[in-house]
Image (tube, rainbow, N blue to C red; front, side):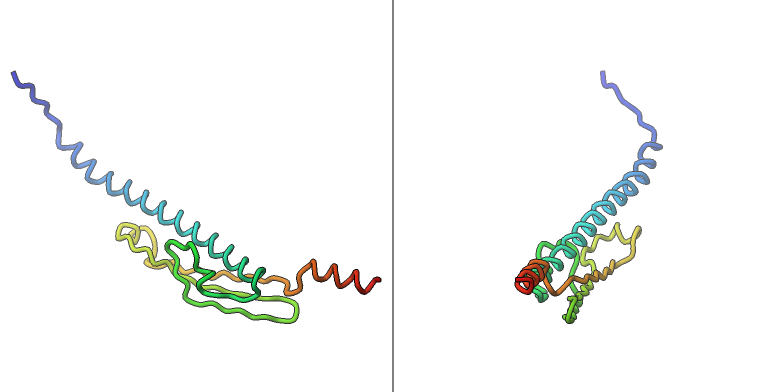
Length: 130
C-alpha cells in the first residue's frame, strides 16, 4: 500500500515568492553590517594614524576593511590642528542587494585633532612656572 500525499501547488508558488524576498533582506542586512563595520574601522584607523604618527599612510588606514576601498586621502597640518579627510566606496558586489540599495555606497570621514599633545602642554607649563 502506497500512501500518496498531495500538496497543493499554492505552497510552491508562495515559496517561490517569499524565499527570494527573505534572502534578499538577509543579504541586505549582512551588507549593511559589513558597511557599518568598515566605517567604524576606517574612522578608528584614521584616528590612530593621526594621533600616533601625525601623518596618513593609505596602507595603515585601509587595514582590516572588508568592503570599503579608499579612493582619496587628504591631510592638512596646521599650527594648532591636524585635519584629515578620507573618501571610500564599497566594492562588495551582490546582485540581490542592488535591488534594495544603490550600486555603490560612498562615504567621507572628516576628523580634526589638536596638533599639540596635552602631555607636552603640561610639561611646557611646568617648565615655565619653575
